[in-house]
Length: 190
Image (cartoon, rainbow, N blue to C red; front, top):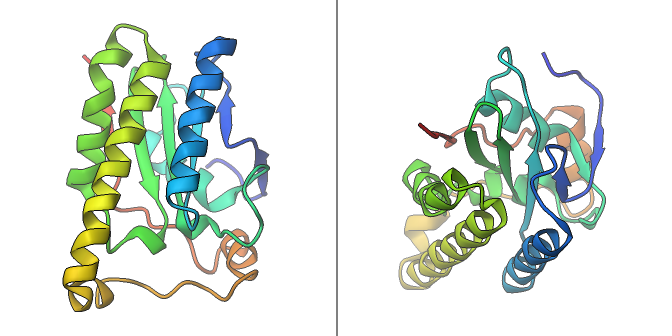
């Protein structure tokens, strides 16, 4: 539905024009903070109008599988990525993540993160909402990290091993090892 080719994007792609220069810097700073805190992961944000035909969940899944994010090192595969997608026209936002996070995040977590941003987004404060979402996501991952240290077996059986360094991104783009479609939370604003 969205195409088969690879898509080259910046980690923060604001196709909808939601962020002014200062707001963009704040979001980028929050994304950089997240990357320093979790160097094995990355966060990307895409804003744009998907039209009535597009399903935000399917689009997020497709984009995480097909995108080559310019600022993300090639040895960091998309399966260790988190993509936040916002469509201001339909007033919807979603969050998808790769298989490497399967043992650490679930649908309730993505809903909790999106809920933190919801009130800000309703008021048109998109940067504020994204920063709150990333702070919430960081808190959840810190908590899961502690839980993993206490009970590694619980998380080990849920985790899928990462592809070999360097070939994960290529395999993702070839469609052999897609990012995890579930859990995805579509957050629709009233």
